[in-house]
Length: 472
Image (cartoon, rainbow, N blue to C red; front, side, top):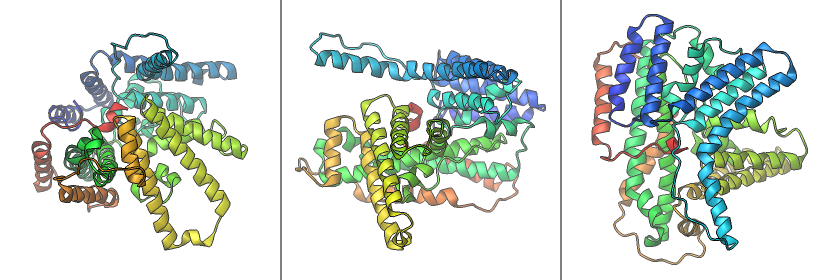
């Protein structure tokens, strides 16, 4: 049961109704916590214990950290939180990768092995709520926030269902202060939430999912049956798809949170308008990028050490960023690719300094085109279904070593082009603010939004594809 699934459109109104009918803060938050656990258990049956166990550990650890001034004890308690979160994350996410890598190495060395016949399902949102738990205990350790005395409040911060499955990664310093009193839900907030929810649903169902069906999945599944032009179309379509899919989820999550009176942090800021790889990572998945900066890059020393140390820190952070997204070698390569680009851009910045030509319109246009090209090349690495097919698409994008096979006749390129334009127009949607209307549901405005949701769900693809970042 995820945002675009039909059962969710029964679950959500019931939770909103129950939440707003209850009077006291304790009743509201208890009800919302239980609903969030139900949402989690529905998506990950049998794994509710994972989020419960980590919630209990981090809640207790934070209280112990705050209760002592002994530096050694504080570090030990913090280590318990970090090891618990990363340990469970590694067990679920990286065990299969480690076993498969070990079997491949054994076969390469000539040992006879049996193929793996088991698998491990990933609990819902484990990559996200583990980072939330770590940031909370680290912030308590750094005395940036007080430990939460009420277990229900801390558990709701971790399990709040709008952002539970795919973020944004919410920090305690951003969310917990909002819980001090029951937030007020105004008509303007309701309408703002509706605008975000409907816009995100449109991005998902009518741009991301149709691009997937029309060109991305057919071409990436069998790139040898298509020519270079189709490969390039598919690569660009994939860039639009992943943006509309992920930002669509974020829009919906932020919109739903507003109906409960909470504000979630932004996760995108016009990422495909970036003029450098550094600029891109300041705009894309902002909650993850800033988390890695504050809780990994800075503790490693950031740019305070030697140049060699700084470049090593950048490479390590982005390799880990790649592996955070997925436990596979192509994700490792994707992280390494971005790390190398970050190092090259840093070296370029230091070499050119404040050169006047870098402020010219021509240079900005060239920088944007080069950055977009680099991004599309990198995104191929995470969408390809195999190295042979991925290299074939990369060759088409690079213009080297390609020979035609089967022409991509019949591809609805006009329709695809229109969808791409609408996907890129989503960037503008992020910054547009419509005038707030003081309406009361039901009203013409409210009924209009409701009708839009019904139409989107009804007319969208029959087999809705799950959100891409749910798998991370």
